Length: 162
Length: 176
Image (cartoon, rainbow over the protein chains, first blue to last red):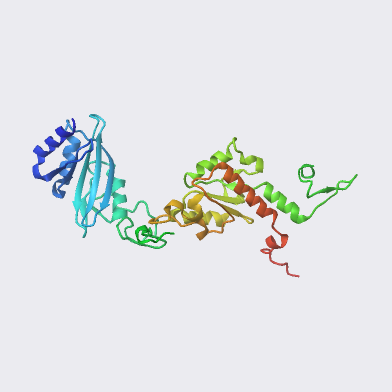
């Protein structure tokens, strides 16, 4: 299926739960409402015309007003890709886990939980993954984070040139 | 006879006898500098250049340098690559396990001072000299094998300059 066909199929199937984004990229890109997140993902995986059987990226993003979880899907059967995003609040970001849908989400979600502080409800193995063992300095990929041995980039626009 | 043939500066032959005269300092320094075995580990892309330097085209072997997979048998630690906080503890342990005398060569911008990870980075140590003493720094990202060979020669120069009272300092005096 091409981009328009995938967008139309999802828009007719889920209506307002899926907000299609207009982008110049070849793959369809959309926001999913958090209540329908697992349902839409299972549909994307199981529908024979879509058949997104491979989750190849799951990332957190920190915006000034929200967190986002961005997932990239691909189908080796139909050779198409899809980008889906979920908006989360800045305070207490929680999202159900995807590891029941795609097993690959397990480590991606451990990474996003550790670096952004996003809580993945129902995760089967919520241990830290990347940072060192006695890390207790918070979530380093959040904007404005500082910690030991952290040197922020000097602001060149203010004439601070080293 | 190998020593006599290869180190004429340090050994004088007494004609007709099997006796050689040299300074203990010179002989020790010469033997240490000529068999500088390095610890085999690489942390990032600089390790690729180290492998290239160890392989036949550039050839560390001609300096008497062989990799050892055990810190107990290594004299030189080459820190090749990005030192993350997670790895820093392991490097400290490896350094402590090496026997004296030991030398450290920091290869590449990351090992010297953090390099491209100096600003806005939560995970990289800003230079391996924060945790272990470094003898020779080699800048570059990554340095070419020629630079690494020059760094190894600098370590040799440093060893040749050592005085016997310097490295005998650790030995406690015997009780009478």
